[in-house]
Image 1 (cartoon, rainbow, N blue to C red):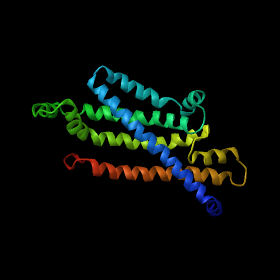
Image 2: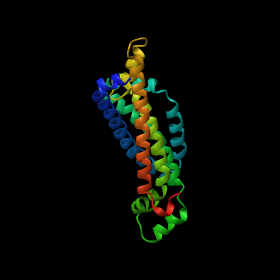
Image 3: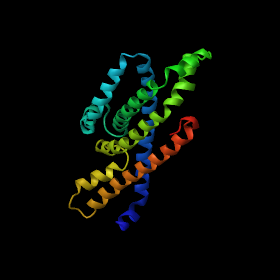
Image 4: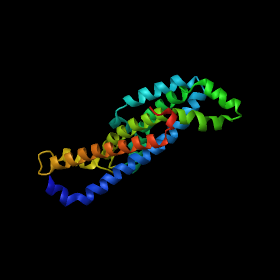
Length: 213
């Protein structure tokens, strides 16, 4: 294993960077989409049930099946990877954002209106900050899940460490099959732990002291 890593450390590092970049960019895009949808859902009460149903059903769709649907539309490579990772990343964030925004006390929102805040100012200065801890929890779940989905997306020749996993599986019985699979799998796990730690720090830095648990 050590010899395998020393011979390929540059490629492993590059693939780790690709994997992280894919997940971070997809989760960032998913966060924007999820927050916009959550604001719409909370504003239109009838959409809450729809949002919950879509989130629940979306998470049950096998990633391989979705990948099979996306490839004929956008081809292979980076694009289908971004599409499916962003899709799955959006769902936990959306669900938590709706719960968080909906859980803000109506009395606080009424007080904000009484102080002359516009609906947008009330959203940005009252509702989002109070809902942020719940939203960040969804963001952490989304990031962990996206790490695994990004590895599966390598089936469509997407970037990242998933390529090592598939190489190992396709070469079962070969000299380096186990090394490829282990490096890819352990690498994904380590990256997931690092990103989760960074999100914990981000949550602490961006959450108001008055509402920290």
